[in-house]
Image (cartoon, rainbow, N blue to C red; front, side, top):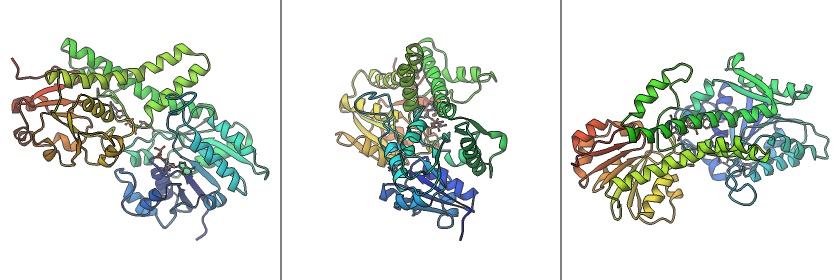
Amino acid sequence: MKFAKNILCIGAGYVGGPTMAVIAAKCPDYKVTVVDINAERIRAWQTDELPIFEPGLLEVVQAARGRNLFFSTDIAAGIRSADIIFVSVNTPTKTFGHGAGMASDLQYWEKTAHEIEKYADGPKIIVEKSTLPVRTAEAMEHILQENKKGIHFEVVSNPEFLAEGSAVSDLLDPDRVLIGSRQSGPGLQAAQEIAAIFSRWVAKDRIITTNLWSAELSKLVANAFLAQRISSINAISALCEKTGADVGEISFAVGSDKRIGSRFLNASIGFGGSCFKKDILNLVYICRSYGLDEVADYWQAVVKMNEYQQERFVRMVIKEMFQTVVGKKVVLLGFAFKANTGDTRESPGIHVARKLLEERARLVVSDPQALENARKDLAGLAGVEYETDPYRAAVDAQAIAVITEWDVYKKLDFVRIFASMRKPAFVFDGRNILDHQQLFNIGFNVFPLGKPSLTHFK
Ligand code: UDX
Ligand code: ADP
C-alpha cells in the first residue's frame, strides 16, 4: 500500500510508543514507524506484552500494528524514508559534570541529531517531543545545518502533555496540542503540517501554534505549575497535622473556588514521575544561567518541599513506631509513582524504602504493576522482599505504608489483613485513600497525612 506520508518516531518509550499508536490509529493513510536502539523494547512492542503498562494502549496498538504502525530497530532506514521525524528519546537529569543534578543530559538526544544528519537524504521536519531545556531546538538546528548535502531540516517543538496512566485518553482528547516553530515561511508551513496530523481528531481551537521558545518553555512551566500545587498542599498538610485541621477538607474548600479549581490538590508523600522534578530543575537551571537567582530560588522551593514531604513521611513512620523500626516488617503498598502505571521513576517509594532500610527495617514491596522496576531501583539492598499479593505481603508485618493510590487498595479486606499482622499494627496512609475510621475500628493505629491520627494508645 502507498501511504500519504511517512512518520518516524525515534524512541519507543512512555511518550513515543503511545503517541505514535494514537497517530497511527487516527491517520490510517500515514505510515508510522517507531524505532529504538533497545531491541528488547522493540520486540516487546511487536507482541501483546507491551513494554509499558498503560490502560487502553494494547487495543490501540493492536488496531494499527502491521497495518500502518510498525516497530523496528533499523534507525537508518527509518530516517531515510521519513517525511516527519518525531524525536522522543530519553533526557534524564545530568548525573555528572557541569549542571549535574540540574541540567538535562542531552547525550541521547544529540546522538539522534547526528544520526538524522548522517542518514537523511532529503528534506524533513524534525519534531522535538522529548522534554528538553529551552533552546534545544536551536542546538538541533545547528547540528542539522552542518550537513554537507544541502538538505533543509525544519525543527519544530511539539511538547507532550500526556500523563502516565491516562496516556491514551489524554492523547485522544487533549486539552491542547502545542506546536512551536520558527516564524519564517518554511517554519510556519512545517507547523501547519504537524497541526494537520492532530486536526484529524483534535478541534482546531485546541491546536495552539507559537514560536519555538514559547512552546519549549510552556512545557516546563505547565509541569512546574502542576507540581507547585502539590507542594503547596503538601506544605499545608504539615501545618494541618500540628493544628488539627484536615487537609482533605481544606483541599475541597479551597478547590471549590473556580479560580483555583479542584485538581492537583491531593496531599501525598510527594510527586514523582519522570517529568516534574526534571522539568523544574531545568527551569531553575535556565533561570540561574540568566542570572535570575530569585526566580530560580522560587521554583527550586517546589522541589525542596517535595523532598521535605517524603522525608517527613519516613520520620513519621519511625517516630510513631516507638522511634525504631529495627527488624520490624513494613509493607509498602504500591511502589509506582502514581496509580495505573508500572513506572517508578522518581517514585517517593524509592526514598521511603531506602530510608527505612537504612533504619534496618525489613521491607515487603507490593505493587500490581511496578515490581519489576522496583527490583531494579532497590537492586543490591538487603532486607527487601517483593510480593504482588497484598494479603501475603502483610502476614506478620507490623506496619503498612501506602505509597501509591491504586484503586485495589481501597477495596482490600483489612479485617483479614489486621488478623494476619503483628500487634500493635500501624497504617501510614501516604495517599489518604483508605477509610481511616474503619481501619481504626478494626484495631489499627492510623496515621494519615495532614489529618488527625487515630490511635489506640492511651
Ligand atoms: C505529568 C504531567 O501531568 C503531564 O502533563 C506531563 O506530560 C508529564 O508530567 P505524570 O508525571 O505522568 O504527568 O503524572 P501526574 O498525573 O502529573 O502526577 C505526577 C505526580 O504527582 C505523581 O506522583 C502523582 O501521584 C502526584 N500527584 C498528583 C499528587 O501527589 N497529588 C495530586 O493532587 C496530583
Ligand atoms: P520517555 O518517558 O521520555 O518516553 P523513555 O526512557 O521511556 O522516555 O524512552 C526513551 C527511549 O529512547 C528509550 O527506549 C531509549 O532506548 C530510546 N533511545 C535513546 N537514545 C536513542 C537513540 N539514539 N536512537 C533510538 N532510540 C533511542
